[in-house]
Amino acid sequence: MDNSLLQVLTVPTAPYADQRPGTSGLRKKVHVFQSRKNYLHNFIQSIFSSIDLRDRQGSTVVVGGDGRFFNRTAIEVIVQMAAANGVGRMIIGHHGIMSTPAISCVIRKYKAIGGIILTASHNPGGPDGDFGIKFNTANGGPAKEAVTNKIFQISRTIEEFAICPGLHVDLTTQGKQMFDLENKFKPFTVEIVDSVESYANLLRNVFDFAALKHLLSGEKHIKIRIDAMHGVVGPYVRRILCEELGCPVNSAINCVPLEDFGGQHPDPNLTYAADLVDSMRDGQYDFGAAFDGDGDRNMILGKHGFFVTPPDSVAVIADNIFCIPYFQHTGVRGFARSMPTSAALDRVAKATKIELYETPTGWKFFGNLMDAGRLSLCGEESFGTGGDHIREKDGLWAVLAWLSILATRKQSVEDILKDHWLKYGRNYFTRYDYENVDIDAACEMMEDLEIMIVDKSFVKQRFAVEDKIYQVEKADNFEYTDPVDSTISRNQGLRIIFSDGSRIIYRLSGTGCDVATVRIYIDSYEKEQILKDTQVMLAPLATIALKISQLHRRTGRSGPSVIT
Image 1 (cartoon, rainbow, N blue to C red):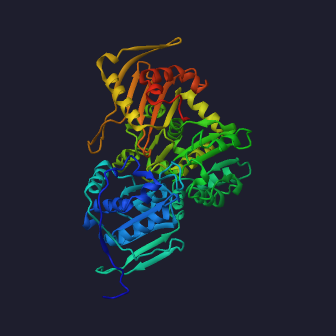
Image 2: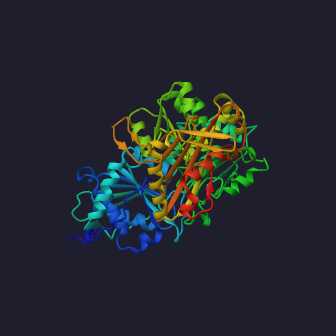
């Protein structure tokens, strides 16, 4: 045998019962991947085995991650297993780092059969933190439930995996690396690519970079403050906003990706991005934004830390959509929001006579509508916003969309929001997160709550708080029938809808590791009182939400971990 050929091995293994991918892939504590024998290998083999061998042979697969701890270790294993499973080419971000939106872009650009994204999104990193693996399919978007179910079923019965242990890739050098494997007619190719350039080029074709450059570095430029939270977006911000659009380098902070995100929680909200909020309060910056670990989420702030809720953000972008050149060329096919997201977008859709879709939480539902040519813009209350240029939510895209609106309207963020509320009224919206709740207690509470609200006697019940009376008009466990392929998604969140349109929604988060996050969403519309404090306006509904669920008693928690 030629000693220069790399050996492909088939290694016996035993299955694990807990490798069901959630909304955002498989997420566990780092120590689970490190301590359980072949835990990583089993899941990666299950991904490759879910792809038909004929499609897999000679195919292209994209790999990248948010730079968190265990990222490079996982990439080496994935490359070795991809080669052994017949993949012909791997495209990997330089140093193994690539944002989730960029991976979606690169999958589509190179017509890959899919991509493996190594991220736990906004969850903490480091040796004691979380690690995640997500599979995106050929459209660049998260795998549909049929695919993730297939991966899970394979993982439950797996007996062996294929690997080429002698194959070692240099992630530090851009360019092609070729490897000859035994019993393979063609060399296995690995391309280490610039993590930013393909994605940056896509954005150049979406936005008017000349107008944005004038806004950010022209004669009367605005001052901005961008916090990458030591996640993957730092290099993208530096390259696009600073080098290309002319923002001062000191406009962008925490731009070096770190394995533990600097010991912080890379979640762009008012709690975990408090340093950014504080830096905005004195009014020296006109616009602020923060991103999560893998770059698909964003938070938008105006002068003095004026907070734009994610539901308002997507509604304002929708109302000003033709400030973005891309939509001037493509037109607008439809809007969509996840069910827990407030109905602010619905009001824009109704006024503009554009179709509005209400989907379960999870970007894959939006991707299906986009692939069918039915959707152009969408958003989730969990700080996710995006268009049909890729099949993932896109934090930097959302920031450039907002800057495009500022460049066109020449108003402040706060004035744009207030004008929007004057035009449409205001959907007051908040979300209470109860993190790290005992999973059994959380599940029991949700089961009992569902039994209560779906009972026919619950409808028409009245709840009085101070001088407010709310009557239940509808209560259910949200179910979605996809208008494209008629697939049905059940158990997507408990809804209580009152006669005035106000809503209380309860969900268990699908992205936690080992413990549960209970989320309560509250949404209430006001036509006249548009400048009140959100928590004051929603206090009666919050009281009702806690009374109905008995959450504090059932979980032993006295209050939420995070309020947004």
